[in-house]
Image (cartoon, rainbow, N blue to C red; front, side, top):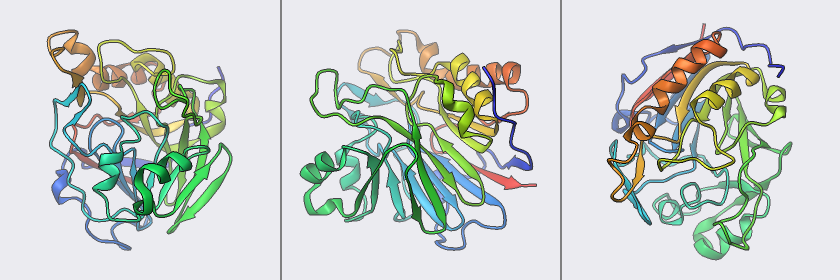
Length: 287
């Protein structure tokens, strides 16, 4: 499968050096001059600062969700209000309404096409601006451009739900080009996304097995190869686990990040991988 040429001129500094509680706090001048900073809060929740614009992806800010419990990392402590929230799809571990209610009222939301009606119905006036995007459409937020890109994942709220919206990922263009993949399986058009400076790539899930429309570590390594990523941070693993399953395949909980790094070294040697623990931060700097 062809790949995009690897992005050049970006390096990683300070991986894990700053805890989430102390991260950021300066709006408008927290990043710039070729610096992008992020904190991984576990699962698919990432706080990203680029060009002074602060984005939050798929916020899951509590310690339990249905039969799942947060098994690793602190509860997220955000440094302030995000300029916007990016939601990749309708599944409850990505579109979590109790977590959205913890954000300042009327925080702008960006959601897949077909999701706004559900969001407005559940959140009511607190929903604020809710912008729907289909792949190829984009919106300007602060000093970055956010463009929806394809993702291959189940579109429903649940397995038998009538609430449907196609899953998407996002390309964020500012000082860097960041690909937040959301939740996805491999697809041929990944090469069209690149080159990207930073990939936030799912490498696992919340249970001992993965169904269709997901990336395991080898597939995630192939994804960053196709996208020509200069740097990659594995997400969507090692945070939530079903009640009573702690001793069932613990390797599927703890090891996907390191396994991804090992596979990426083999198939995408131009990509620098940074494995974080939930709550840790990293800075990506233009060199």
